[in-house]
Every structure is written in structure tokens, then in C-alpha cells.
Image (cartoon, rainbow, N blue to C red; front, top):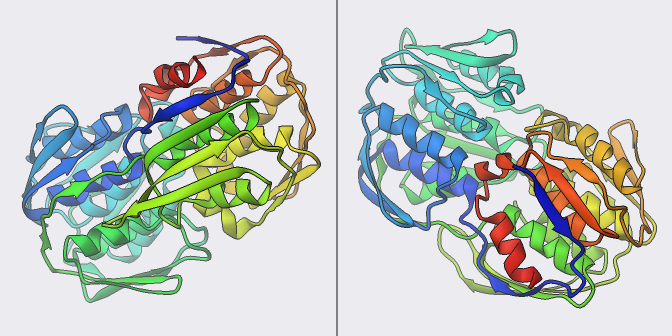
Length: 429
């Protein structure tokens, strides 16, 4: 499906609640399925990616009841999963493939995880190597890439002290999940903080988990206790409306019930530093902090994003690039290597689209340089390249173009935000 999106001459106005957080929805199913007891998950994200996780655990014997916006999961305990009848298809979801691999490493049955064309090009050695150190019987069937085949280990997994070469929540979560099945304490140390949803949820489910700076340690062989979970709104999905409201003249938008985890709010901090008029009202705490965000049209100025800030905004960098192209002056985004191994090479795909919009960006080593000051993008035919974040970022760019933009191949948005176009139209009326 293609989108045709016009310039938002009247700005964006109104309020809405962004969809439930995708990362937390995945983890609620994963850890609810291997916990002891029944848990209810309110405000679950029924997107394609999250359904891949849900169906994988159903295939391994977990009873999961669906309601309008909730799940009831009858947890099987750490060792209660059963062998699936066939391969576990992860679709486009790297989160599913990488974290579930950690859980499967401790099981007594074999399993093979496959994905779509995009996922089949994403590197998996980053999880295979630490899992092998733990004694897991795991390998990729296409050099460094999926499918991932996991067979029962010869004995209990071994606890390790692992230092990740990059700050990756998926790698960290995979190792910690495997650590649930290891004797002793398994620790993961990162170069920078990545999102900590796994640590929060495991602690909430009574895991013996401790954090000391950049090091997280989990003690294995302890059953998880099921508890009810409410998923907050996804700040990564909210990001497109945040940037859209800042850039479109005459905008005022309130986004409700958004997750405000400090390991995910890097975009907010960066946009405020650029001059964005963004007000946050924290509403309550829980497993995750939640609040409302008000955004008003603002004049932005270029900034420098350091490499240690990237993990807190890794999924928001494409739409930040749109904001930087409109801001006064130059913006430099450092530590961009992880952008190249997402659903697309987001450096190349953003550069290809921006060139059509009349904006130039350049790479200098591991730094992306955007010379801002573009008052109005050229209307153009743009492409998602099969990447949901690219598609939605181009929709934001279209709002401040000089006409109507066509965005091709937008079905990929269903992986995270099936109702995006509907919500964008609601705010654009």
C-alpha cells in the first residue's frame, strides 16, 4: 500500500494516546509465559511483531486468551514449555528472535527460528557467541544470519560475566533470559545504558536481579511469579507526532499515557536542547513511569548527539534527522553504526529519501552530519524500503513539504503502528 500525504497547512492539533509500547508488549508475553501462574496484560499491542511473539509461545504450549486490548497468559514456569511442531516464524521481529533464543537455550527440546527477508539479513552472531559461552547448543544456518537453530544443551547452562561490544537491549535481554536457566549469577555489562524494560519486568516478576551502574546480574534457577501488567504508550510511536507538531506551523498536540523510561526518552531531551517547546507531566509510576506530553510549534537549532545518547533513542533517529534538516545550523549524530543493522540500513535509506526532498546528509566516520535550515521540503515520491520507522518518518517530512508526497510500500508500518495513518489524519484535520 502507498500513502499520499499533503502539507499540514493548519498544523497538528488535538490529543491522542499512542499505541501500546512494542518492546514492553513483547516482554510481557515472553516472561508471562515462563512465569508460574496466570497474568493479565492490559493495553497489549496487537501489531504484527508482537503477534509473532504471542504465536511462538502458543506453539510451545502456552494458553493465551485474547480480548479487545488485553491478554490472559497461563504461565508454564521456566521448564514447562513444550516442543513446537514446526519452525517458529518471527516475521520482521528482531526482538522476538533474539530474546526468545535466550529462553530456548535453556529448554529440553530443539527449535528453529526463522524470519522474513528483512530479518534474515540481520546479524545474530551477537547473541550466538554469548549463548555458546554459556554452553548453549545454538548456531545460525546462514553464516551470521537466520535461521537460528537451538538444540538442548548437554547440561545446565553456565553463568557468565559478559561484556557487550555494543549497547543493545536485545543482546542484554537474551543473555539475562538465558541466565534464568544457569547455575549462579549471570551478568551483562554494557558500554552505555540500553533500554531496561527486561530488567524492570524480571524484577517485577520476582527474579533475583541487581543492577550496579552498567552491570546487570541475574541469579538463575529461580521461578518467576506471574503478576498483572499494564503496558504504557510507546514513546517510539509518539515520536513522529512530537516532531510533526514541533515542525508544523500552528500546532499544539497532547500525547497521553506515554512511557517515560529514562532509557527511552533521549529524543525528548535532544529536542528540548534544540529549542523544542515540550512539557511533560508525570502521572504515576509502576513497572514503568508514565505521563502526558504537550508539544507546541517551535524554532529548532542544530545540536550534537553523542554516541552514548544513541541507545536511548535508537528507534527515533530517523525522525530526529527530519527535525535536524529543518533546524537552524548543523546537527551531528555520532555512533551511527547500529542504525545500519536495523530493519533497513537507516543511514542509506534516510539519505536516499532526503536527497529527493532536497536535503543533503553526509557520513564522516561514525558520525552523520545534517546541514539544516531547509524551510520546506520538495514534494517527492519516497520509499519505506520495508522499514516502518522510515515510512513514518517520511510521513512527517511530507507534512512540511511544498505539496503532496507519495510514500511507497507502507504495509511495513503494521509491524509496530497499524493505526498510524488514521491517527495522523485525526491530528491534521
